[in-house]
Image (tube, rainbow, N blue to C red; front, side, top):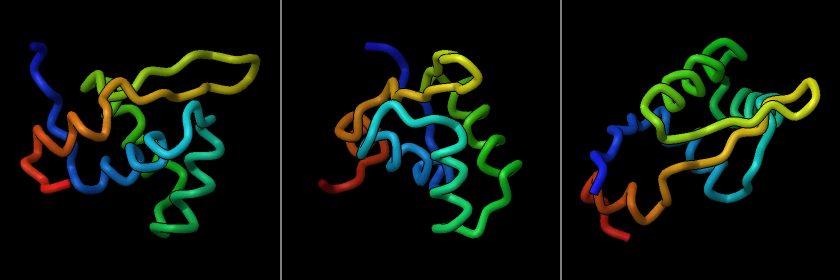
Length: 85
């Protein structure tokens, strides 16, 4: 089994969106989280970059957009973080 990436509470907000609907474009993710969390665009982009480096998400370039997909399932996350379902 591969080592599970540690996902912070803030990063998990990005993951929650991707678990609900994938793929999502960067602009969709930014739009959702700037409304929900009052985060700046740059903050959301930072979390996307961190999650990508941790191999928790992947992206594909589609025209001018980047589409993001989770590489970690919600169940795997709950197990790894010892969160009851």
